[in-house]
Length: 600
Image (tube, rainbow, N blue to C red; front, side):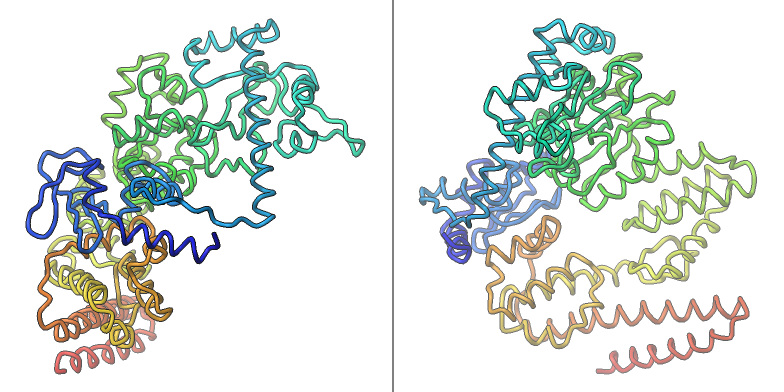
C-alpha cells in the first residue's frame, strides 16, 4: 500500500471507530449530558474528571490535562507508537491491515536490521554464558559479588563477561554464520586491517546488554574489572543503536513506570541494577551520558520524572542539563538530593533500600533543588554572596508560569538570604523586561512593571481558546481569522501551534480532523486541542464573538508592548541614555493604536 492509500486507511479507522466503545474497554464510563465520564486511567483519582466526547472524537482529563483522539488514547494507555496504535485499532475493528508498499532500499535496511538484532542476541547469550558457566569469569563474578549484585540480578539484566582473548567472540559468531560485515557494522568487532581480519571490541569487561523497549539487545556497555581505561566502553552508533534514544533497563522498568506514573532516572548501569534489587523497579539509567530529549520522550508513560544522579560536581551539572530537557515535556520534575557525595548504588549499599525510598519521597522541586545547590555553593553571609544567589535564581523563577509558585519562591529566597522580598521582585522585573520574556505574571502589589490582572490573562486565554474552537466547528471562519489575526499576538505557544496547523490544513484543503493533522500536533498541543474541543461554550452569535476574541488578543499584545517600551524608556532615562526619547515615542504610538482599537 502506498503512502496516500495508507493515510486513507488510517482515516477510515478513525472515522469508523466508536471512541466511547474503545475507551470503555479500559475505563468505566457513564453518560452525563452529551459526553461520557469516568476516572482517568492516567492518574489516580476518585472523582471522575476524564471526559469523552463521541461527537467530536476526543477525550480529555481535566485533572491531569491529558487528551487526544482515539489513536492518542491507545498510544498512551498501551505505551506504543502510532503505527502500532493503527494495528491495534484495526484489530479491534476487525478490519484487515494492509501493508504499505516498501521500497527496495527499505527492504534492504529491514533485512540488515534483522541481521544486526540476531548478532546482538547471539553476542548477549555468549557473554552471559561466559559469566555464568566458565572459569574465565572468576574475577568478574568476584567483582559483582563485592558490588552486591546477586545471581537474580545477573539473570534479570542478562549480565555477561567478555573474555580477555582478542577474538573469542568473533570466532563464536563466525561459527554461527554471522558475516564479518555485520560484526563490524554492529560494533561487536573492529577491523584490524584492510585484509579483513578483526578483533573483539569488548575484552575483559563485565557486559551490560542494552535493550530497546521490546527487549531486543541493540548494544552493550562494558566495564573493566581492573584499573585499565576507559572504565566504561559503549557500543558505537549503529542502524539499531543510538544512545540518545535508549534508556538502560526501560524494557524491564516500563510496566512499573506505567503502574506508578513515576520514573526514577539514574546515571549508571549499577545504580539502576541496585535500585531494582532494592525494590525500586521503576528505575532506568541514561547510559552515563547527558539526558536527552529523545530519552525524555521514551518516558511518555511517566507523569513524574525523579532524577537521582550522583551528588558530586559532575552529577550536579548533569542534573542541571537533564532538568532543562525534561521540563519541556510538561511532566512534574523532582530531584533526589543524595547526601555524602554518594551515587544511588553507594547510598543504597550503605543506608539500605528504605532510606533511598525516603529520599525519593522527599525529592525536591526544580526551584528548591537550584536554591539548595546555590546556597551550598555560596557564602551568602556576605552581600556579594546574596547577590550571587539571587542572580542564579532569577532565570529559574522567570521560567515559571504560575504566579502562586513565583510568589512562594520569592518569599522563600528572601527568607533564606535574610533580604527584603521587594529586592528579589525588582531583579525579576528587570530580568523579564530586558530579556523580553513573552509572559505576564503578577508577583505582588509592589510590582508595577507587570500590571495585567488575572481577569485580563484569563480573558486572553479564553479568547485564544474560543477562536480555535470556532474554527474547528466552522471552517468558513478560518480565512477571516487568518487575515485578521497576527499570530505573533497569540501568547500561548501551544495554541499558536494549533492555529498555524489549522491555517495550513485549510490552505491545503485538508480536514482538521484528519489524522495527519492530529499527529502533527504533538502530545502537548494534542492535549490542549482536546481540552478546547470539550469546553462548554456558547456558540450563538459566533461572528460577533470572533471579532471580540480578535480584539482581545490584539489589545493585550499592544498593552504588553506599550509597557515594555514605557518601562525601558524609564530605565534608559535613569541611566542617562538619550535613546529613551525613541522608546517614549514608540510607546506613544502604541498607545494611540490602543485608543483607536478601543473606539472601534
